[in-house]
Amino acid sequence: RGTLACRIFPVLFGSALHNKGVQPLLDAVCHYLPSPLDLPAPAGHNPVTGKPEALLCDPDTPLRALAFKVMAESGRRLTYLRVYSGRLRAGATVLNSSRNSDERIRHLFRMHAHRREEIEEAVAGDIVAASGCQLTLTGDTLCERERPLVLEGLAVPEPVVSLAVEAKGAKDREQLLTTLEYFQWEDPTFRVHEDQETGQTILTGMGELHLEIIIDRLRREYGVQVKTGRPRVVYRETLRQQVERRELYHREGERRPETAEVVLRLTPLPRGSGLRILLPEARPPITPELMAALEQSLQQGCLGGCRTGYPLTDLEVRLVEIPVEPGAPVPGEPALRAAARRGIAMAAREAGPLLLEPVMSLELELPTESLGRVLGSLQQKRGRVEGLDQRGDRELVRASVPLAEMFGYMTELRSATKGRGSYTMEFQGFEEAPAEVQKQFGLS
Image (tube, rainbow, N blue to C red):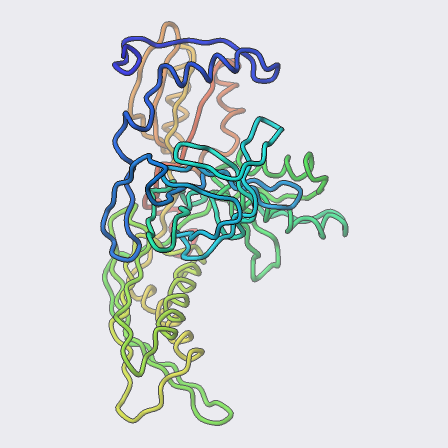
């Protein structure tokens, strides 16, 4: 009771590396921390109706399990699951409600550090590892197809730093993409794509250190040697004003002309809203398959941006209409895709695009005598100091700083504090870039 009321704070000592004090720590978790029955029921929503649903930690209720970690082990996926309710059996086929796909659970394991114990069934409250899940990623929900539910998964921020890599030798080239795919299974904030103009492999992540660790793991764990470029900030584009555009695509085909027309409305949204694509209900002669192809093309068009090549964000894209004259042939999928992508690009250019830069939340700990130098350095980096606290002879500084100004900052901080300063940094959001940065990218 004292622990739950935050009046008592148990402290335990041990070493996981030497297996000292591990069991007392696990016992303390059971004795002092609240069980799932003591906490509010986790929330989720029905993917069909959209209505919220609560669930109970009870093995006799429908299955609800959250994938909280995915690992690559000898080239195979091992998915770590927390079973919130119901029962999960080896050999069962379950629904990944986050992706609307079926997964077959081949084997279930109870993990004991590097040793694993195969089990036939997991019940509510268990944490287990499963093999056989081919599409499940971190944050996905597994449930019964008859009773679908999507749990509130993990909030995954968008990557903000990119790095070009190139394999050193032929053997490294063969292993590079496969190994990077393993890393993407494990880390939802890590992305890989190929630059269409240069053919380079581009890694994107949450910061300079994040990508340095990826490169180090390539060399240390998989023996893949790579050459790297300089880290670059991943900006975003957004629009200043609403715009509506009618886009007509026409091309002379081999048998008959290919024609398609779409009407798009682009509306800027508040910062942090992301991208929303709204489509009307499919009605003849437009089929649901054509609507799905259109949605995919609109997403691809937004990913390509309109001026700088950076993705569009904080934007609502509404497909207002697909005009089809009575008696006219139904537009084909290639023509509709082309009209949608060109319509996005041209409409965005008309709406006054502007550049957004990633801003990081920074927390520094440094000696009091170094405070003046560090604050002056933050001002030069366009930083905003948001709070100051004192802890003995140490100062805690909270600030927000554009990521573009933070490359190599650790060396600068050590110099300013004689090696006694440290900092942590996490992504805060996107803000409008200053005029000089806008001009560098041809925007004003």
